[in-house]
Image 1 (tube, helix red, strand yellow):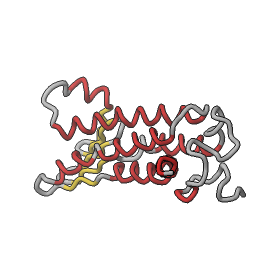
Image 2: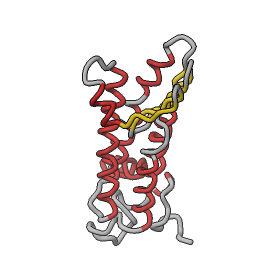
Image 3: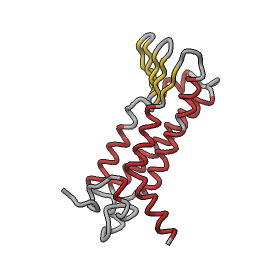
Length: 179
């Protein structure tokens, strides 16, 4: 078991570590390599398969980063198909979902770069926050409809992941600027 400042600690309390990685003495090219970086990548990838918004009303619709699942009848519409069939007339809330998917894709690329030591965890965390916040308009637009509830499940999970895995890098960076 590693100590609190070791490379296996991804908790918010590990902010004493180096901004980009695993602590003092690590070189710039290897700061985020290893198990913590791989763990962060797995978490970021997992966020792409959890429901981002669950819409309960007359029927159930689950919005994912990769498409929409509906229960009346049970069907999955993949994101590329949705874009092809809805090229005009999309609401601003749907556009926010699409923008969030693009931002999330950038977060995936940034997290993957961390495996080889080329990421800035502040960027990845910021992208996850933006992706999470971008989904609230979608949930709200469904909740405003009569007898419908939009639950921003993925939004909350994206924000929690950003806080848990990436907030320490941001606070350390702020602390360095304050000195």
